[in-house]
Length: 271
Image (cartoon, rainbow, N blue to C red):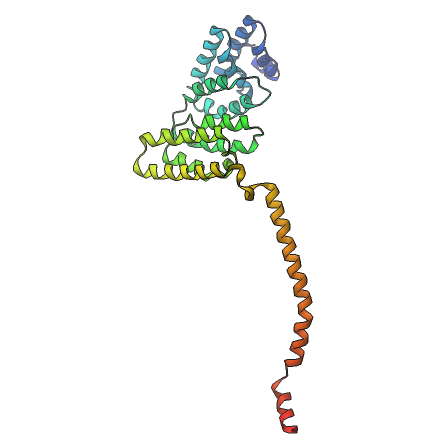
């Protein structure tokens, strides 16, 4: 594999699958081989790298430690880890992945510890907010919120949360989702400057309002909107019918009373 990486490339998916093999020796050999190929730029790093992330929760301490070492080295290679994080999160949040909440959070805490640059943080906040639109389950909402809560927040990051609120505002009724957004507020307030605290408090109030409204806000539910639209169209139709009925009467009345000045003058002369 090391001597002929181009031949290995089409088969990498099968190679990653061996990271879940029953044999500890097979899992460890696969992890060592993949680590060497990736860190030496012999194969492209793709979304399947989430399988290596799962190795951090392997029953074997040797495999778990080697997986952490791999990501420690990958984080040194420019933006490699940063670019992969959104896909890793999405893959590990998929319902098909038999991963517990505690394992997911343990993996994410370690990976997010390597995100240090402000620009990376800002971009990740925006990317994770957009990921809410592709989620199908409440578990995925909670996982994304947990990841958002792992980031340090500057004023620009808070503005990203505010600007992209339409991506997640319909998820805030969930108590766990709201809990992680509240954690962002608590952590940011500790070290925030006065002007940033004002923004944090504004966001806090907006999130609380959306959470409290929750499912009881009938005006935001699709069914109620449909009813309102139906009622609105019915009212419009009835008004239109009424106008059509009144139009002939108005024209008739105008015909009787609309006499030009010249005709009125002739009538006065004749009298």
